Every structure is written in C-alpha cells, then in structure tokens.
Length: 391
Image (cartoon, rainbow, N blue to C red; front, top):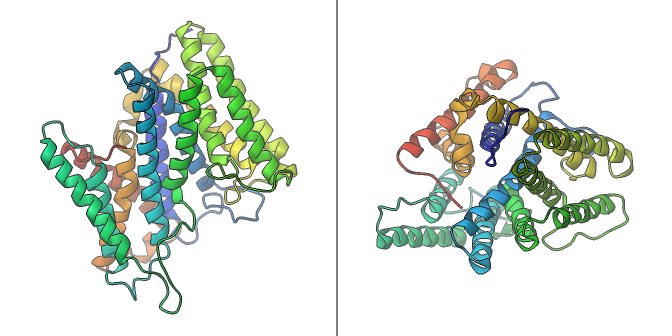
C-alpha cells in the first residue's frame, strides 16, 4: 500500500475543481436550452441537477481544510484567544460579503445614485481593499491606510444603497445570507466546535450526529423551529463532515494505517450516499433549495468518493500537474469567486452581449467553460501581481 502524506495536496485540487465548476454553473444559469440535468432543480421537485452538487461540495471542502488551518495557527504559537479571534474575523468577513451580495439581488438601479454595475464594482473594490493579502514588504501605515479606505468605501456604499422599488424602497437587510454568508455562519460554528473539541474524533463525531439530527428532524416536522445561526444545520453538517474526514485521515495516516484509511473513506462515502437515498422519502425528498437531509447526505457521499479518487491521483500517483491549469482556483479561491462580479459588471457597462449562438445550447455551455477559464486566467495574472484576497 503506497504511503500518504499528512498534508493532503488533493484538498487544493478538489477546491480548484469545485471553484471552477462554481463559476461554470453560475454562468450557465443564464444559458437557454441546456440539458435539464445540468441546471438547478426547482425547489419542489424531488430531484437534483449537477449544479445542485457544487455548493455542498464547497462546504465540505471548507470542513476538510479547517483542521489544517487551525493547527497551523497553533503551530505558530497562537493561543486559544488568538485562534478564536482568527475564526471570528474570518467568519465576519464572509458574512459581510455575503450580506452585500444578497442585497445586490434587490438593488434598485433606477432610483439609486449609482447604477447596479458601478455599485457592484465599487463594493468589490472595497472588499479587495479590506481583505487583500497585502505583501509583507508594504509598510504598516500604507496597509492600514488601504484597509481604512476600504472600510470607508463600504460604509458609504451602505448609506447609498437603495433596494426594492421607488414605490416600496428597502434598505440593506438579510433577505438570506448568500453563498459567502452561509459559508461564514457554518464556519463560525464548525470551527469553534473543532477548536474546543481539540480535534477529538469522538467529540467531532458526536457533534456531526447532533447537527445531522437537527437537519433531519427539522425536515421531518419533528423539530419545527430553525435555531439562531445554526438554522436547519444543513451547511454545518456538510462542513463538520469534512472536518471529521480530515481528522480521521490525520489519525490513521499518522499511525501508518493506510489500508484502514482507504476502507474508512470509501465506506463513509457509500454510507452517506445510501443514507441520503434512504431518508429521501421521509424528510422532504431531495432538494437543494430546502436543504433537505437527502440532498446533504447524497452530495456529501459523492464529494467523499470524488475526494478519495483525487487522493489516489494526486497524493499517491503524484499527478497534481494534471490540474495545473486551474490551480489559481484552489489557491486564490475567494478572489476567483469575486472576479465574476467585476467581469459581468464591466460587460454591462460597455453593453457587451454574447451572440445568440453563445447564449443557447452547446454554444452557451462552451461559453460558460470559457468564462471559467477566463476568470481563472485573470486570477492567475492577479496572483503574479501579488493581488489576492485572504480571510
């Protein structure tokens, strides 16, 4: 049995693939006449499309990375208070960005001072100024100056925001938390559970079961109320699942139990998928919009099995270069997520529209793949210029 490293390189590859596909499914949502299996399934349809798999996979990947991120802080000498602050600030950044993104969906470009595109560009610039991974060579005064400028810009844009319509104006409010916001809240809970459990696998397993039980009982009508922050615990269950798999990996590989690891990861992938299919008739079917248990566990099972395959390809067979072209999506993931907001806004400002054959059918699908590679190319260029976000 080939040995495996304690640091799993395939996590970065899985993150890159998932981010690439997230850009693709976000763009292909605007393409007409594509196969139904690619699209998001309607809320009340007891099924899921390929697009419904991407976000839960990303939540699971955040969980996979979580033990390594926290351990890295500890290895640098960070104490409990310092790590807690790191977790809180990281979650806060994601929640803030998600909050503004959600309100962009309701932005009234007709009544507001700034057009939707200009507002989107400016808020994204604000995010970059506040959360840019500034080089160590930059003086502290300049770095703090840029951060303060970003905070001021975001605050001014919050004051200028106008949502709803001229007849029914609305201010900024959490309609829902958005992709980044959901990740932020789930990370806040999952990271603190991991931190205070000290990575104890039994405690993590009990926590995973508890959150899964909340998700299951809420959709079976046994537990009627969503808990503050936790909600129906669907996102936390996915993230805790990732943290649990990584923790078990570290323990088994640390003890050189390589065969046990392969049995464990394949078993949990198949078990998760099977449980999702089993619970499907009893807890609201399979629905991404409603975050049903079947959706949670089926997606988790698929992601675990894909992760196992990538561990074999990347960590055992050392084929990481196969995925080199999309590497920036795994190393500058948040930057990759934000760049489309700038790109689409610029398209709108210059009145650029794709020709019809690139907005429908196979041509539209090819376009969406092109957009994914274009975004990653832009991020690659920004990385070379030392411009990437880090929270």
